[in-house]
Amino acid sequence: MLRKIRIALAAVFFIAITLMFLDFTGTLHAWFSWMAKLQFLPAVLAANVGVIVLLCVVTLVFGRCYCSVICPLGVYQDIVSNLSGRRKGKKMRFTPSKEMKWLRYGVWALFVVAVIAGIHALVGLLAPYSTYGRFVQSVLAPLYQWGNNFFAWIARRAGGYAFYPKEVWLKSLPTLLAVVAMMVVITVLAWKNGRTYCNTVCPVGTTLSFLSRFAMFRPVIDTAKCKDCHACEKKCKAACIDIAAHKVDYSRCVDCFDCIDNCKFDAMKYRFAWGKQIPSPAAQVRNDSAEGAAEGAGRRAFVATSAFVLGSAALRAQEKKLDGGLADLVAKKQPERATRVVPFGSKSVKDFYKRCTACQLCVSACPNNVLRPSSDLAHFMQPEMSFERGYCRPECVKCSEVCPAGAIERITPEEKTALHVGVASVQRELCIVNRDGVQCNNCARHCPAGAIMMVPKEPGNPDSLKIPTVNESLCIGCGACENLCPSNPISAIRVNGLEQHIRN
Image (tube, rainbow, N blue to C red; front, top):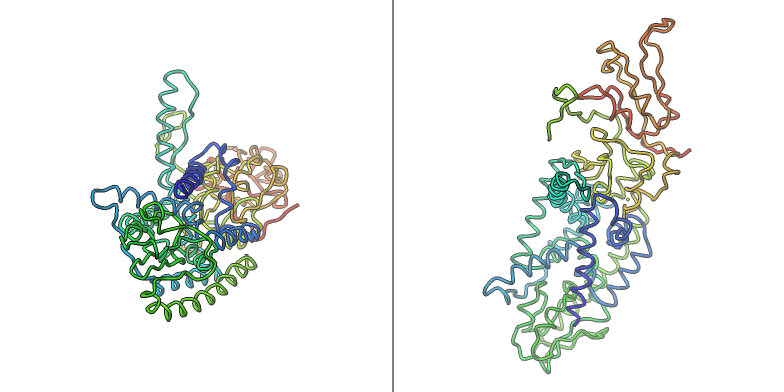
């Protein structure tokens, strides 16, 4: 029964989070964005003390059920492991293994240093929720959108409007390659050895393992009933059950309850076990010294992880196109920016990248194709604003509604109009007024803030063509001017970000 309940809850979280990343209509974010805020690392970076305390208390009471229910990457590994176990002769394939402490705690220490030092690429690469989110956004979402476009094509020919086409484009090739490589490693490990990644690499799993050692409820071996059949041991995908010693490594147990479900002698039970587990007399002699050392390490690890949680919370987060004359339209290219532009709702460029876990939920939610993963090594896979395919419309606040890490604070459309995240500047040598000798004023006509004015190119000449000039005090950095500028491939007007965002 416990296993069925765990699977049902895991299915709800896994499907809902996956659909949230796939949904390009913005409908599901309102329903499921709270699940993203329950993820451990985003809660730490957002200084969401309530969620952090809740997850720690749940782990201290029930064990590492977070890893097998709430974490989508953990559930993904369970799915892969289950599929692998359906092969002939592979149902009882696991064997107990010792904890790889040097790797496990080495990666954890490296991750903590990366969080404190602001090495964003490493933090994003190792964060489990963000890793799965990038996989869905970069790999599954395009497939999903192509399927949608196929049905839209059919509906259009049938005279229906149940589907509408969605533009599919490669937002970042380096990010895609990194995502594919990471997921191949995780999938292979899960296929062969179950929860190896969770218990040797994942820093969140290691953090929670410090607490799960002291969980009030745990799977316990009843030595009086155990027949040493090794069934539980061979079904344990965390490889944490040693029947020869009648011992369970609770730091690696993820409470999947497979062992309980497969024990034919009712020797495995999930029960209140606040004190020590009592092994068989033969195993007691072997384990006394080891248990003493493990308890000492557990206490030190508990203190270390508490400091990490509190310290981190305090630190704080082509398709070819043609014009009307059937001539090729040259695609716009991203210009060099003095300062990158980050979304409305973030306090500053530094604060945004300090909190962002690169899960790319905001990239999935953006309906205007403005957000894309950065290819810059310093902020690798973290989103930035770019205006080749759209601009940030004043009425849209989707990214602020879904960010789980507090990198983008929730704002209303009214509040957004009072925020300044960047400022436009004119590259006069690229403007078609100077380059082609024709009047344009496209940027001024479409500026929602009224920050662009057209002034005579030749002052005092009433017949002079007019060129744009920017009132920097009014410009909010939405990118409408850059996106709609007819100069290709580089716009004659570009937006540079503000290091510190301004609120009027």
